[in-house]
Amino acid sequence: MENGFTKDDVVVGPISGMRFRDKDSLFAFYKEHAQLKGFSVVKRNSNNKGGDTARYITYCCDRARIHKTKFTTKSNNCKARLTAVLDGFGCWHVSKVVHDHNHDLLPSISRLMAGHRSVCDSLKRDLLTHDRSSIRPSKNIRRAEVQCGGP
Image (cartoon, rainbow, N blue to C red; front, side, top):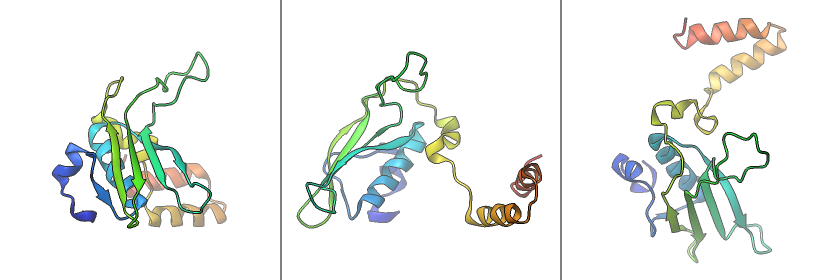
């Protein structure tokens, strides 16, 4: 893995004091940990302090948002989050980690969560080509199912 971390480190998760060379590798590490544990991650906030470079960044559970309507089922103000600060050497230093979720973690279906879903580049290219060729979406979906080993 990047930054010299092992798979065991990802399972344990982020710990205060960890260092990452850039925020992309920090996000990738936390996202992989989230997928193994069964939740999804979003960027909550960052601060640029008048410059182009962010000085701190917070990633949190995707259920951390506060209810906007009384019918929302996903948001429940989860407190799990990771805060990192950019140090003087250009490295990201994890300053605070909260692992407390107030909802069930679902590792068995985490691959279906929006933050963990992905389509390979070759399939994206094929879908775009078929779209330009006016091939119907249902045919595209059926082809993708067969290509991925589906029914």
